[in-house]
Length: 205
Image 1 (cartoon, rainbow, N blue to C red):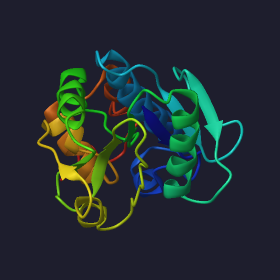
Image 2: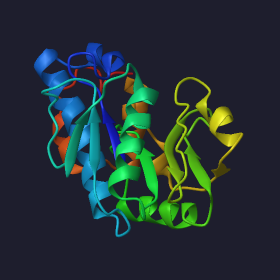
Image 3: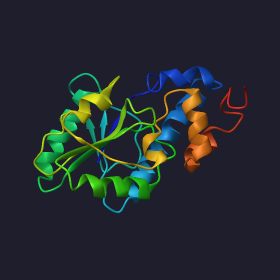
Image 4: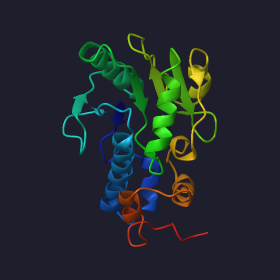
């Protein structure tokens, strides 16, 4: 399982204005990532977590391996991570999971990966139906990530769309996303990081 990790303070910049200060924003970003990784690790069919960081020294806990990308951007990070995974574990399929799914449950991910194992390539669209939260390839297949605005259409041109539970589809970029994730039920780290003292606007209209 590949999980990209953007370094602070740039990570989740659209959430920055909603935290009390830069330190609270950092705690929130790391909490969301931690809950995503905890759910992924708990899925029965995830063999390992490989985090692909955008620069050395990125704050990452709980990874089996951390790679530092050479190219620029998310897609370059995932291509490099996929090449590493294919070389090191050639009999395993590859899955790329976004790192901002605080409401993810292990069983949702496991079910999606079970479905993906029957397809050459598969993906899960986000809640809006336009982005992508999970992209997979069977052993020996190129991952060919095409993340970014409208990625569901690009991935759908060559991959099978999978049904998935709400936690797997609900990535968090904005305050509204965070509110909805809290309604779904987030992991313990995100719950702690969204206490009123940490997050300015959670109780606002």
